[in-house]
Length: 392
Ligand SMILES: Nc1ncnc2c1ncn2[C@@H]1O[C@H](COP(=O)(O)OP(=O)(O)O)[C@@H](O)[C@H]1O
Ligand SMILES: Cc1cn([C@H]2C[C@H](O)[C@@H](COP(=O)(O)O)O2)c(=O)[nH]c1=O
Image 1 (cartoon, protein in one colour):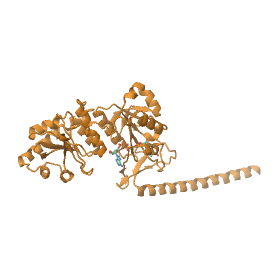
Image 2 (spheres, protein in one colour):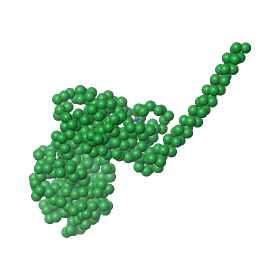
Image 3 (cartoon, rainbow, N blue to C red):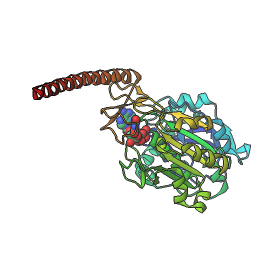
Image 4 (tube, rainbow, N blue to C red):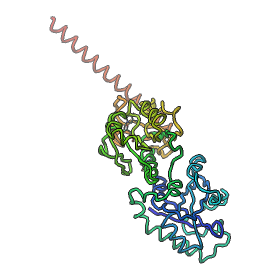
């Protein structure tokens, strides 16, 4: 995996550091891991790159070291694109003199180009020189070499001062409670996204708890694991009241963020989330299936939507054509709603293939039914014959 860091000169005293990795899921993790200890003179760049050319930008020890080495008087920070309310929350407490607004077009015109090397940075850096470009290339290399360390750092360094806390904490609703729903078919990246948000919150110094249903033990009981193998320790329980009992009241009170995976399996999902967000003021990140293999509502995840602050429906890639897949197709003939399984039992499909798949399944069922019926009636005839023969 490549990790590219790019330095763009915004004005004489401000450079912006941006990083890009090919994996959307890991970007925030990378950014948070190296985003620590902004200096008191740190200035904050507000930008809103389009999500297509999604960039995480950061200010960190490594980044600042890199800046000192390669740029003049740089004090840098930039935030990845965030909804404005989150941005406002992040920036609370910073004096306005430290906040610099960079016009979106200056950022995105540059972002939309290839990031390999930094020659395209000149669209932003008005007086960049070729030697600076060379230094930028060196900076890229430096960070590429360091990427493994960055990736594996478990939870980033703890925030050391209030400024830092304010800058990187995802307290979009501090003390107010919040519910964020992540839903979609299987393989859509729900768990990956949940783990990313949980990790972000933990890196920001928030007390985080993670819980999943103990019905799904495919990858073990004490960790939430994505289909790609990304793991995070968790409590596995049959219902959410049991989670609270398991962690104990004192520890539950301490929790600021609670991640819930496989939410469709929790019968008390609605009650727990309502009370945890409204009464206990927790931030809940809830990931689960919105629909089952027949596209019927699954559990009570959908009931949370009127209570939610945000709802994200993710899609996978259709296993049959590669188009975006919003539905889960069950490959077996089982008809119960709950059948634990992975790619052996399920595949994500697009609308077209869901519908044609259901037609195929229905046809197969009908054929089977007719076949069974004719065998039964043959059997019945045989029985009748047997009876009539024996009666003679
Ligand atoms: N058909 C597919 N479409 C998208 N991702 C897939 C598909 N099959 C396997 N995957 C893998 O599944 C990962 C998502 O896993 P995960 O976050 O556990 O999803 P979910 O929790 O929604 O089931 C993707 O990053 C990808 O590597
Ligand atoms: C569609 C569907 C799924 N399930 C099960 C199968 C898996 O164990 C989980 C979903 O896991 P993921 O993290 O979203 O990949 O739910 C089920 O029981 N019934 C269904 O209809």
